[in-house]
Amino acid sequence: MFCTQLVEISSAFQDAASSSTTKSGRKSCSITSTLSKESSETLALYRNQCYLRRKKTLAVLQPIHCGPNTKKEQVIPGILDGMWTTLINTATTDCMKRYIESSPTCIKKIMLKLVKEEVKKYEHSKETQVRSLRVLYNGGFIASRKYTKIRNGGDVGRKGAKSKKTVQFMNGCPFPKYLPYKALMSFVRSIEIGELLDVEDLAKELSLETAHGMYRPLSTLLLRLADHYLLLHSKDPWLNWFNGETNVFHVAVRADDVTFGRDDTATGTIHYTFNSAIVSYTCYEKCRRSAICI
Image 1 (cartoon, helix red, strand yellow):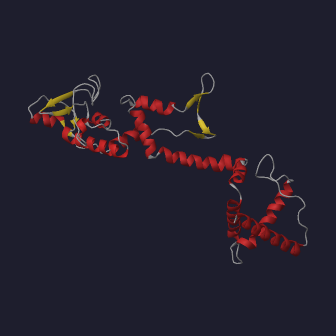
Image 2 (cartoon, helix red, strand yellow):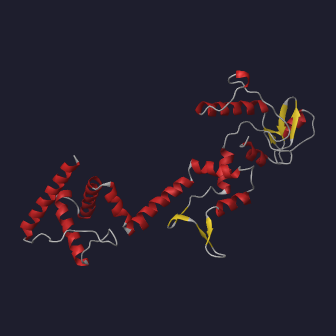
Image 3 (cartoon, one colour):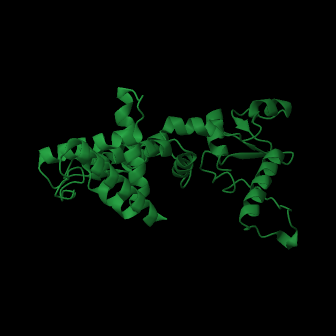
């Protein structure tokens, strides 16, 4: 099939060349076009010879790819579309690679622009949100200043004793960054974490000492956690059921470490009232931030 296409294309070019010779009376070229060793954008010929061959190529291809009523501004795009489809469907992958990698225009302008666009898309993707959350909660919730330092310093290298430069995997294109802290926290706040209630309202209802903050009812929290674990288990079995009781969860809650952190952390203060755990936070914001890692 491929050989047949080459024969057809070769015959078409021979017909076009003979027709051009008949009309103009000029002889065909005696030197085969060969790429320059320095760049695939020029031929190993003199500059004026390269220009004349490009001009003749366009003239020969115009009647093939452009109709008699084609507007003047549509002639060149029509010829280029025909040349491109011929090239991409005729040349091998290795041949195309050789053309592209030795073309400064392709590497420094076209490829760089495409890669930058893909990097920007990746920086606003779900994958980047997950990567950023992993950094934010690595070893416990970290402060905004530390997160920003990690975000800005992870792809910075030394260029001498004092100066710094951004590490790039391609000239003019740095590594994808994590989400900015504000954008990440906006994403965290948008996550549905279930029902949140005011600790002050519950304290008044139970005639207890007032505490500022929010809490999540333990029963609804456990149900959400159970659904989450079952979903993960269905994709990749990892749960070991106690006494062989499938889909039965045994829950233990204590005041230190599991699951809210040690007693010296922001989520470590826990009070018990009528078998319900009330997590006391200093503010509503800390509650939302901490709830994601439960």
